[in-house]
Amino acid sequence: MSIRNIAQGGLLICLSAILQLLPTTFGEIFIIATILSAIPIYILSRISPKVGLIGYIIAGICIFFFNVHEGLFFLFTNGLVGVSLGTFNYILESKLLISLFSGIVLTLSLSIVNFIIGIPVLGINLPGKLLTQISILMVFSIVYSFVYLYLANFIYNFLKKRYPFK
Image (cartoon, rainbow, N blue to C red; front, side):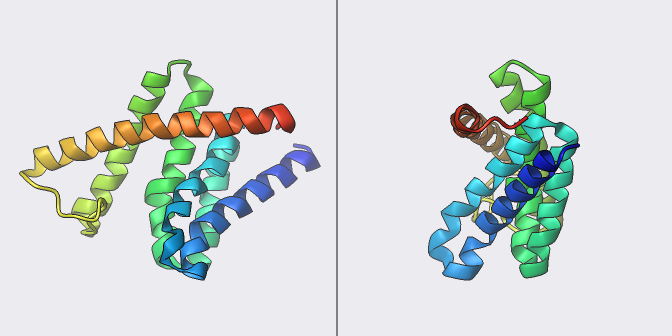
């Protein structure tokens, strides 16, 4: 592994942590910026799934040092979206399959947060029985993954034209 790759990884990990921690530093008005914290992890995972997974873990640990709540949120949502979309994009060609598999991973993670830890992940208590609630999470996760994949691909391709990653 070259010095350039290590520097790129470190920069992307720091960027991911900074984006996730913006609301804790500058106020809740920057809560929407946390969504973007998955993009650096996506880029790392798309280049190399192993490096992406390591970057996801390191970014999560760094965020934990500053704020436990944001660290948990990153590990169970934003970071997980980045690593799963990037990894599946590395392996698969079909955007639909990438979104479907990432949506399933996100659904499992959101189910842990919602049903085991007890934090309502969508900000509300989901209506209906358990199967209905999981179905709502599944539909939300797949649609979110599909839309996020297009955003992440756009940013990845834009950056790759101007600065080659490998």
